[in-house]
Image (cartoon, rainbow, N blue to C red; front, side):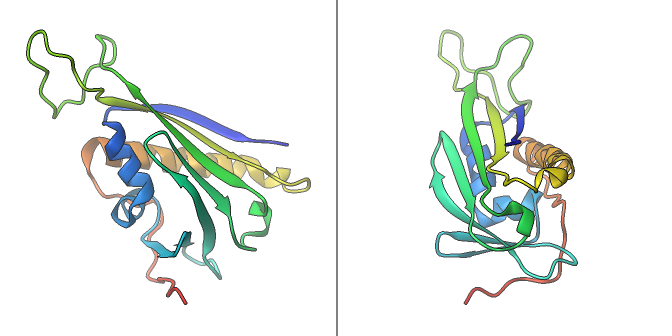
Length: 168
């Protein structure tokens, strides 16, 4: 079974990255303006898409966020899951701290200023493999938006839609 796996380092603390993955303001800042929630199910609307993507939150803590597909749309996502593994990456000379954060006083330990994010999207069913490269390309572009948002706070959603799903 194919699996999409992408890893990147983000010059922002883990709590900032976690908030971008678990809050309405975070998700709408880099992914889609059409984000909503119905209990433990996230609803994502996209332009020219007939119904929202439904992703159940299975786990959301400082180490890992996991969503499973909870809807019938899009059909090629049936049975898939998405995970985001977060770990601290302390600043080093070759990976400096985020520019807007002051250095720790001499002799004091520094809090990790960087987050390593390992993104995975797996569980693709036989017959859905043809769509995986296109999905992987979109995720790569989305992760750049996520990184930019976490590092700068600049809101720049990849998808902008006037449609907002009204949860039942």
